[in-house]
Each structure stands twice: as structure tokens, then as C-alpha cells.
Image (cartoon, rainbow, N blue to C red; front, side, top):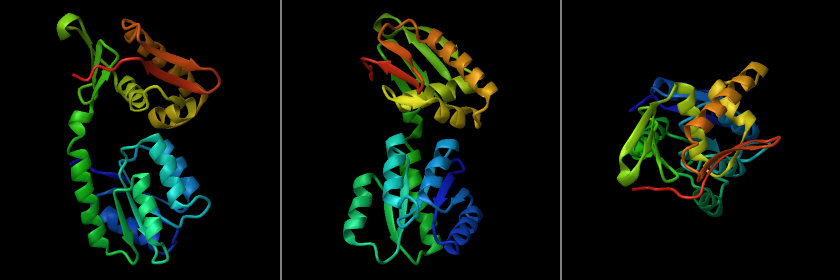
Length: 240
């Protein structure tokens, strides 16, 4: 299994660093933040595989933070950490949002690691299948191999195009949020890791390239949402 990148959002200024050190000693790359707003900003800007959320975060609590992030990526694994004051209703709300686990403090550090590994095995064990995307009626994208295939009649592969790293990352972002608007800022932070003028110009060039690659299916459109960002739209999705 690959090294997991964990976003740890813990409002307890004593517990947070302890958890971070233990997670890093256990082999996880870990980013520590202390409030809900920072958690959302960090998730938008960084590549994150897994999230650990304190239910009682400041500025925006763990539940609202989880809802916001799940709206961005419904498949991101989340473990909640909660004080004993959190009720059964709070716990049920966490699972309704899409939490994978819910642990009460004080946390046993080794148990937390084993729970992370169990969830990761389940979630990322299926990752190879999730790397295959069907776009409209004629395209198939293999993210792991960075290959975009154009199918002819009877599923005959008429053409295969090897994409660059940035083209692949950009296309995957659009496919994970198909038919949804993605802001320019999110794209720049996720793919280019910054929001400079030159990165914005580079992004526009890559968007133009993807449009040309996807132009052969009339049901597929990479639309510019004026003043906001972009939306990859397709009316049918062949999942054979």
C-alpha cells in the first residue's frame, strides 16, 4: 500500500502534536491543522488520502467541516475523534455525513493506527478499479496508466493517447466531479500547487488541450463557467 497522506484536524493544542508524531512514526505523511476552516483550505490545496477530524473544532466544527469536504470528494475516508460530551446523536450524525469511524477520547494511539490501516485497506484496495473512467459514449480514461482511449464501433479501440502528468491530474479532477463546476482556484491548488498568473496561463493551455482530446464525442463538453471555473459535462456514461 502506498504511503498515506493524512490531514489531521485536532483542536486540542496538546493532543494534536502527539497524534502527529505518532502517525508519522507509523509511516504516514501527516499535516496538522487546528480549526475547521483551515482543514478545508488545506484539503483544497493539498493532495490528501485520509482525514482525521476532531468533532469539536473551532471556527467550523468537525461535522460541518466533514460535510464540506464530502461535498468535494464523497469517497475520502474520515475518522472522527470526539470527547465524551459528544452524544449518540452526534455520533449518528457523523456516520450520516459519511464518516468511516468514530472514536472517543482518550485515544489509544496504536488502536487509531490499526483503524486507519483497516479502512485504508478496504478503500484503497479497490483503487485500481476506481482509476478507470468512462466518459460519454466513446472515451475510456485509465488514470494509473495515463492513457485516454477513443473507442470505435463494437468497443474497438480506435486510438490511445498517452497523457502527461498534469493532463492526467486535471482530467481526473474533472471526472471525480463530473457535471459539477470546479473553481479555477481549486484546480490551481490541486494541480499546480499555487495560484500565480503564470500557473493560471498554463492551466488555460492544458484546458484547451483536453478540449481538443475530447472533441470527438458530441455528448462531452468541457465548459468554461464564466468568472468561476470549468465543468466537464457528458449526457451519457458507458460503464460496460
